[in-house]
Length: 334
Length: 282
Image (tube, each protein chain N blue to C red):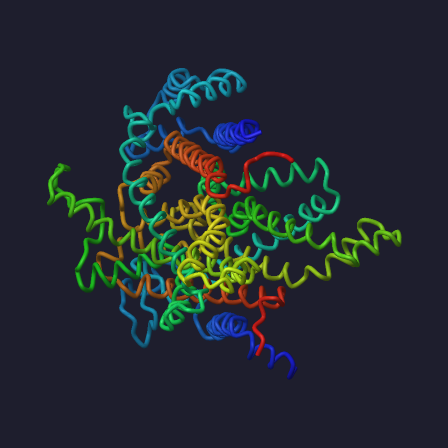
């Protein structure tokens, strides 16, 4: 039945991808906007004089982008292109393709978000487990209120405050960007430390906020787990406190945390987009921000689609790996 | 009354939540009567003034009095959150009850949509929606955009709650005594869900405010309205941080943090009220 479950999950994934593509295609059509026309008119008005022949230009561009064909034909072509991961040209930065632009910024986001999410998940889970453990050092109790309070604040607001204190007032860290202007990216020690110092503030604001959430969740699960009979039994048996903590409590309480991780990825990403915008970090979020400013529909759609697919994949992988962590679930019906 | 006070002294989270939101309400009410709200318009004050007696919160680069912006803009942001939250929880409650009580294919579909929808990064879908209806978004339209996804989470959590409630003995008895489906939902299930629904609502309002501020910071909000998120958009747009205009972002940041902390502690407090097992015995 393992295969059936995996097949089902893959089916859901395909459904997500299809829905995302369809949404991407039809929503802008529903609005009755014409990106080609608005871009041309915008450029004409920037030029400062009324241009003749705009209608002809629109017609040519419509042909070029296939916008003169019937809607269903466009939809099929769109799905075909999407399946090939071809998102056409960027409208604002023609002749660059959407793929080129996304490919440039993806590594930044993956590195920042991947590392911070894993780190805060591990740290938060660990802290949460200790917070619920009666034999943990007493000062741990003082961690709770600040963790709670931080958890309620949006990523980017904390980012603003951190920037002001650490980067503006004390000038410990750079304020803006992914690396210092004028530096060529090379694999040298100097460049790497420049990268790290630029990433510290965005990373810190994500970690500080999300660690609290993981700690809260884990603490709740730990309290429930510690009330279980098998934990009592383990203690009565005289097992070492450490063994009871790690092998009996944490081992079982961590399972819902992993499920929560799969669900939280989307939220973390939404928050991270804004963090990137605030810090001018050259990832997906900043690219999206620019695309929105420049009304670059193809770029916006490409980014949204790719992110949804990437997150869908991550959730799929987590879900398929889940039985490895929890042997009770082997997707077998009895 | 005394009972309420005694309960509040035990439920500190609820107290802190109500306190923070009360402070904010006080600020808004007093501000509403004492502050000249025409000063929210650009060019109504000298631009870029540091906080002083005349402009306690300072002024921004376009010449808005930031005190007036806070007094006029905070209710707008709260309104977006409230409309979207109420719609989200309302739709979510109906779907959850219909799904969880009657089960069957309807339930499978509702659960499927909610589960799939939740794994998708909400802000990005909202961006696509907001970009599609750009033009000039009003505050109410903004609320509708946010509400379009705000029902997913409530549906999921309320459904789980109803599923456990419907197996209780008293529901069983009502069913055997021939009470109809809607009758059971409204007289047996709903009253027991009320505190939980309240906690879910506060949570949904908070999430909706977060989503609306996110959209606004990205420049997809109501451009002409002085909401908290739009203020932050202008902060970012004018690079106030690098230029050292600290007062410009301090005011909205403090207000937003108060809102979120207040709502967060209110949820925690209501959770405790809804779920007596969490109550500490002392």
